Image (cartoon, rainbow, N blue to C red; front, side, top):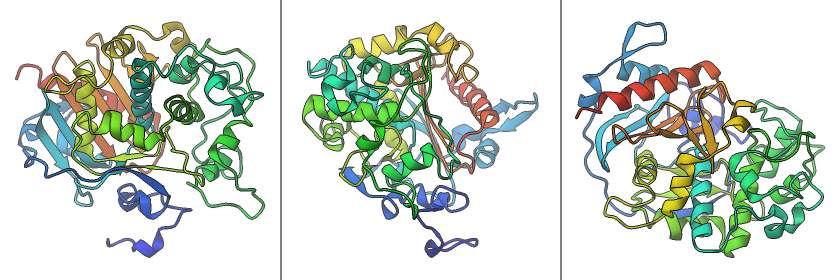
Length: 391
């Protein structure tokens, strides 16, 4: 397979670690159960290649100049797609990557789920201000018992949970065992995602007051969407968003032992379709041919609302100093109206309406979370988007 490992070396215990992730992030279904969202719908247009990227020189974090392609290699990029007005204008692909294979997008899945909630709200099936327990009664007695759906959407749940990606034997490991992303331990009791979520407690500061990033919130939002619509997550995604926005590639989502979708991090799609998702948001919820997919008022709300003070008081404020968070999307606070979706291990979706550029980036960065790498990526993506503004 590669000079450094064979497929037989990859297991459920190591599939998210380097160097194995170079393969497993594009072959998730070999390690975790998945539900199919879509099969490949047809051939993609030919790649424009890297010519437009080779002309760009970016300013590195230390002030020196660096080429875009050099940055792609050092940041463990698998596939980069630059789209403008719905057309791919530049593309870069690592040697190990297959552009036709779905790549796990980790927490960009949250932004997909946020759009699904907006579609359900537009159909009159979901009330963002309703209690979570109205849709998922099993959450009564947990931290979510008196939270609103809006608290899930905006990460303002008062939740006692730490996003510790390297946890071994604690709450986060238990969470990943429930989603079938980690192997069971000899002393562990198998449980479903919903059963795990129902055991979570509070920190004590109250709902709706501060941004506190916790993936279980969006997994529960996926359950809310299912119960509100009466349709399983992957089917609702397929019928209301994926086909409607004109996705071309295969797509899937990981599921637990009873088929509950990992709405916070298990969506797997091609990088070109990730760019199309960004274009949909850029177009205020419409496709390039004008078909309405996501309600305009939901996108407008994403652009104009989100509790700024909750963000400032939250645990991600350093990522976007002037940012906000609304309905599972980041307003990066750059004065350009840029919206972003972000996933661990270097997954990015960047939509800059001023330059009309969407950048989709899938990666297999060894570290799940790296503040310096995130700050660098914000700088790089911003420069790439601005570079095409005059075209």
